[in-house]
Image (cartoon, rainbow, N blue to C red; front, side, top):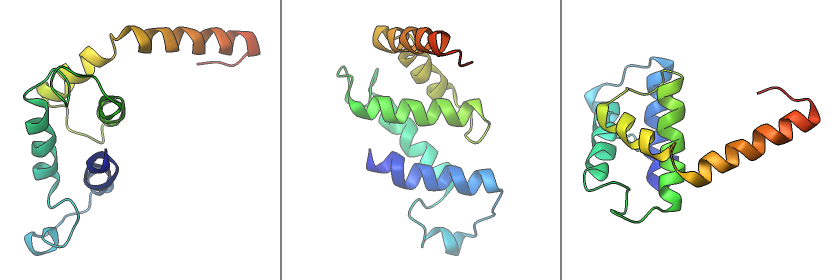
Length: 113
């Protein structure tokens, strides 16, 4: 979880701002390079289907949200492994039920999605 909140968030922000990071600067940053940070996430997803293998954890909620958000808004590279991971997470029954509850509540209050 700390990796998502720290290095990944910083790398995505730097990338979104279009800031060029020199090799020397990358050694002093908490994430190194954007590519190295995304590679680390990709490596962590290899054993799958979740970060902890077969166990779905809070890290999957947090990382999945970060990857989904970043790919949705174009601040994060749409790697095949990220898309496959998020694609499976958004099918989870608990998420689908939460979305249904949210939509029902918004309909009751007159809010729009």
